[in-house]
Length: 117
Figure 1 (cartoon, rainbow, N blue to C red):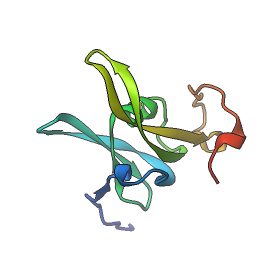
Figure 2 (figure 1 turned 120 degrees about the vertical axis):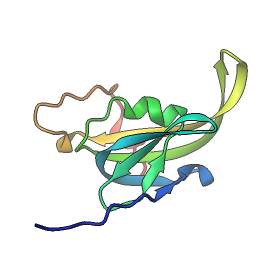
Figure 3 (figure 1 turned 90 degrees about the horizontal axis):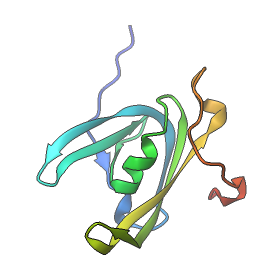
């Protein structure tokens, strides 16, 4: 039996445009905070990543076990039910060669040249 320490660490990638996290996605956990339900996305060998609206929506399509790259893009003015408000945006990429057997990607097609190095 091999033991691994479980970490409760999580990072906020929204501190700087261009911040990124790449790793094998292990799943997420949720917790209640003063802002409502919050998500933390867990990656192998890395601290978790705090969720935000655009990340939460993108991660709904990512199967556990896939290798993922998240890139923080900054704030963008988005039309919401409360009007136009600045909202944090990110891009989420999945290495489709790492999808678990039988998993079908649910992602829109994209140009591989758009993936940051």
